Picture 1: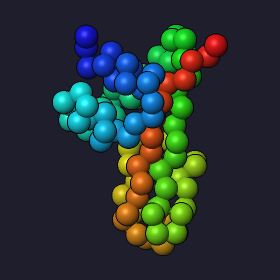
Picture 2: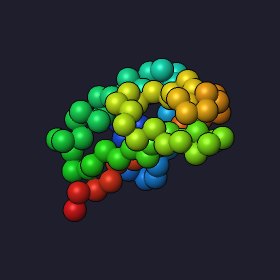
Picture 3: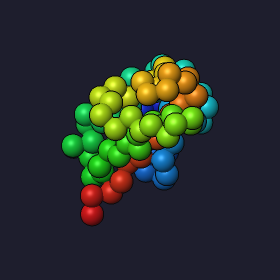
Picture 4: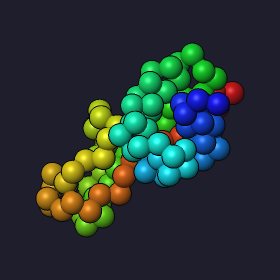
Amino acid sequence: MTKRQEIIHFLTQADFSARELSKATSTREKDVYDHLHHIEKSAKNLPYKFKITSAQCLSCDFVFKKRDRLTRPSKCPKCKNQQIEPARFQLIGNG
């Protein structure tokens, strides 16, 4: 099974952050983001919908709803704090 197939397998089971996927598949976190980008694009051809739970500031509860990039934000635009709960990803069946 390729790394991307491993990540897809995990994402169909539950939601995961990129760091959790990195540890589970023994892949660098940077590479996981690359795989997630491709999975997001190819989800149209899979029987799944790619779901993203937005990152959130742990200090002021600001939610990064309009963020296009999958990577973790460096700091909160509202309070400038760097304690950010990372985004979570999941593949949900279309049927």
